[in-house]
Amino acid sequence: MKYEKFITGALEVNTYVVTDPNGGGSCIIIDPSNGCAEVLSYLAENGLRPCAVLLTHGHFDHIMGLNEITDVFNETPVFIYPDDKPFLTDSMKNGSSLVFGVDFTFSKNITLLSEGVMKIEPFEFTVLHLPGHTPGGCAFLFHNVCFCGDVIFANSIGRTDLPGGNFNQLISGIHEKILKLPPETVLCSGHGGRTTVDREKRLNPYLEESN
Image 1: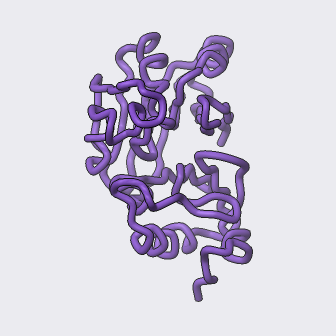
Image 2: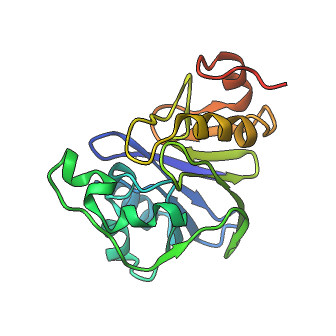
Image 3: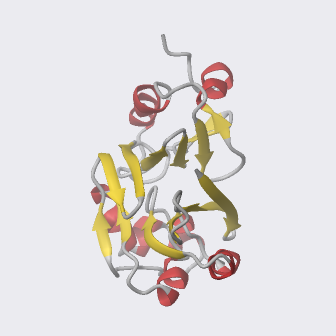
C-alpha cells in the first residue's frame, strides 16, 4: 500500500493521499486542509485522479481544503460520518468562524459513511466510528495502516473539551477499536508523526494496556 503525507493549513494537518494499489491512477484524499497546492501538484505529476475524499471528522482544520480539491475534480464525492455532516454546513460547529473569523461551509457531493467494510473503485477499507473528539469521528483502516484523524496521536489523544466531545466515549472507542488491532498496525494521525498500536499500548500516558 502506498500513501503520501502532506502538511496543510495553519494547524499543520496531515493530509494523506492513498494511491491505487494496482497502479490504475485513482487515489483517495484524506482530510484536506487549506493550502493544498502541493497535494494538487502531486496528483498532476503522477497522473492521479481522486475517486473520493474521506473526512475523519468535521473540524475546520480538516475540511478547509475541500473547495481546492473539488474545484479541480468537481465530481469527487466527499464522505463523512452522519453525526458530523452538520459541521460541513455550520461554520460555528466546524470552528472556522470562531478561530479564523471565516464562515467556511461546504455542501457539494456529500456522501454519508457507515461503519464497516467499504469499497470505492479499487480501494477496500474499514470505517471505524470513534466518537469522542467529535460525535462522528472516524478512522479508516487500509490493511495495516489506520488513518485515525484526531482520535489518537503518538503519546496523546484527541481533545474532548470542544462541543460534541466526550472523554469517556473517546477512551472507550480507542480501547475497543484501535488497541485491538494487530500491534504492528501503523497509526497515521491528523497531526504530528505516525505511531503504532503496540507503541501506544505501551507508552501512551492516557491509556492503560488492554488485556
